[in-house]
Image (tube, rainbow, N blue to C red; front, top):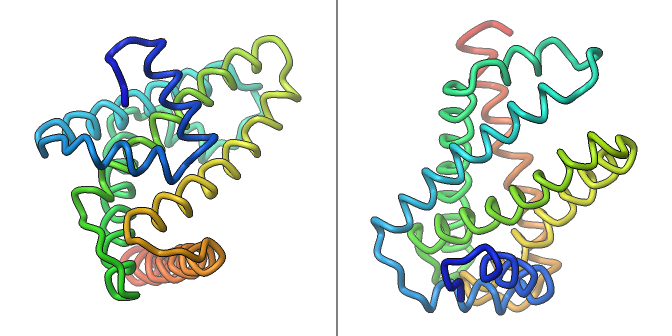
Length: 193
């Protein structure tokens, strides 16, 4: 699927956006060893964190103080993002299996890593737009969120062999809300926030 060049990466990303289930199928068919999957996962965590810090440096001075504090600590940001992605990969695998799917954690991690690579490409374009046309950068951010949901829905469907994208999307949104609620309860009980 990816030939190791920037051109190959961009072509694979474009193919995946145009045909998410085909992209997911091709990626899983590569049967990459777990060591490669974990290496790619580490790369996207570090790369995404660095891009977020760069984006913060370019953002207007009025950026929310809490966001500035989080992004000013790249190691903490990378650790947090890594934990969130691991939890999401686990949810992708386990919730899908509970619904009768056949996907594994290893493939869920691979697919989630690929989603993050595509979102990093969007983030690079967004940083460039922030320098040239800031309002378009904000619009691209919203489009990136929609793209993430579109890819995640299709990837989960392909991972588990589901046919109904509507049901998968409803399950995805429900799982995200439930996970957010649990995390909020934990934060309140731990820190009294």
